[in-house]
Image (tube, helix red, strand yellow):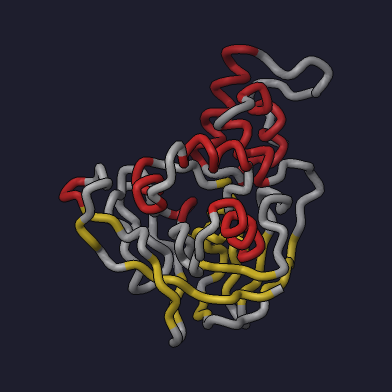
Length: 234
C-alpha cells in the first residue's frame, strides 16, 4: 500500500463554484517536494490540512474532520473505463491518490501511518457537490457518483508530519465495528435508515455525521434488533 501522489490546489475563479468570490481549489495537481500535514482547526475557520493547498469555501470544506481527502487510483481507473477519458491523479480533488488501499471498505476510525510520522484517521465519505460536478463536466454526475458508492474518504490528523509522493501507507489501527466508509456514505445519501448503525463508530465519526445519526435515532428510534439506542455511541 502506498501514496502515489500528494496533490495540492490553487485558488481558481470558475463559473461552477458557488463559493463566495466564485473560486475553488478543486483542481489539484501532484507535487514533488515534501508537504507538511497538520490539523487545520475547526470547520468554518480551518482550511486544508496540507500546507499550500487551497480550500476556498470554508462553509462546506476543510476543517479538522475534513483535513485530508483520499481517493484510490483503482477507483479512478474504473471511472476512466466507464467515462472513456483520462483521469489524472488529483482529478477528483483528492489530496492523496493511493494504490493498494481499499478505501471504500475501510472503517470509520481506521488509522493510517503515511511515511514516517503522519497518522490520519478516517471520518467519513465525501458527498459530491455542484463544484465537483462542474469540475467533471459529466451529465448527472452527482447522481452517478453517489450511485457508484466509491466516495473516497475524509481523514483527520492524529499526528502531524511531512509526506512525499511514493510514501508507504500502513494501517496501524482497525476498529472492531463494521462501519465502513461505504456504509457511512450510504447512510447520509441513499439509505438513511443506516444512520443508527453508524453510531457504532462513536466519536471517530465526522462530527456532522455523528450529530445527524444521533438526531435520526432520537426522532425515529433504533433499528429493530440492532441494540442501538439514542445517544449510545459505543
